[in-house]
Length: 323
Image 1 (cartoon, helix red, strand yellow):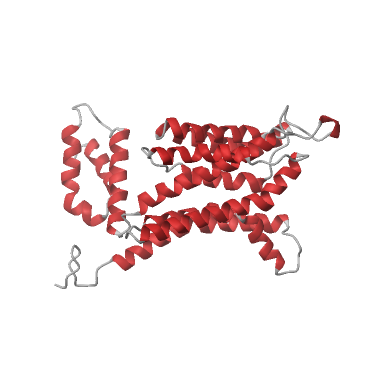
Image 2: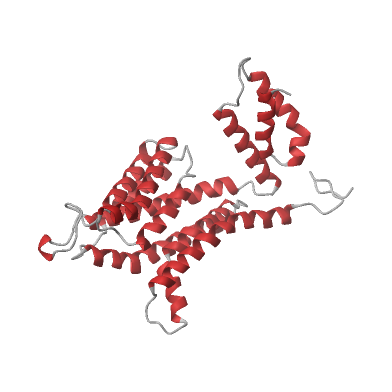
């Protein structure tokens, strides 16, 4: 066995074991026939193709063929929500407190968060004209900019938005990276429209601290509730057409929805002890729990679907008929 064949077979582990047993030699043979005589390593395109095919086959074996369309739908909704919030906050950044107040500012803006919000609005506009790889790259830049704001602000001594506004944006962006490469025009326009609507509906605040406190306590839970409601309606509508992609989208969105509602969830926890408002430690703990448990829901749902889709013992694995 050559080194190239051995490397292709390692990539073939992305497929289920029974599929590798039945068709592994054929798949590897095809790639070897197409490879040049001096080729020693699989190309990145071949590696990505093998991994995608393996994941697709594993989803098919688990009865979760609607998972990929569902995640793409969730990515579109996540990008739309992130664009709306970025437009809203960017508008607030343009009205910093007067310099006479002595409140720290970031040049003509309220805080360093404006760098992240501009990156998000740019990604939303790019989704309209250049979907696919350029949009995913712009979303990745926006996610990195959002995550870097607390670090840069701490090092440079600059004001920044509160973490309750930054953390959900990162979660929405990570999900938005799975956006469809070739969406229809209405889908491409949704994030850009949301950014414009967010900027247009922003209310003028006297200081950026009041602005972010208002968005954290009112707008974030409203955005989370709206996102959850839209996903649930889409899931119900698609289910009427025997399409389960809406339910997968709903499962994928539970993590960002939970992070958007951290203020309410933490308030419920502290409310049991009689506290009138959620404390900072409770909010941090709630965000950590949501961030750890939320991503486990999707693979758990796939496992449950696999178990329910498995044919009974002694049945044909293809048609389910008793042997």
